[in-house]
Length: 90
Image 1 (cartoon, rainbow, N blue to C red):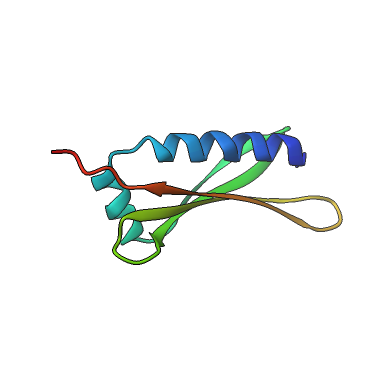
Image 2: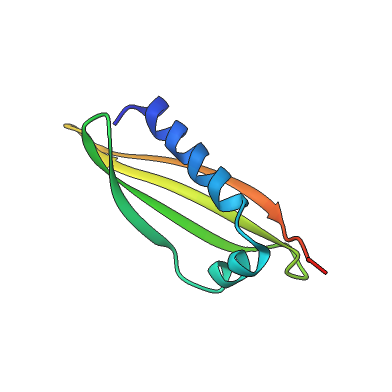
């Protein structure tokens, strides 16, 4: 897995997750991580998204995206995270 390709995918995954409605992000923060397998540079790579509460008061979530792939000699792992403040629509 090429790191540049993996980080590009992770960036897109984080951006997409950050656009989810606050209610969806709250439900994800209360749940388990979810994953899927995609191909990056002709190699199968597991993309895992984990959403957890960030700080006190449950006003923000931490979204972490992991790319897990294998190479000939070792297991490869790339990770990116971002904090998203929850929007409270009135």
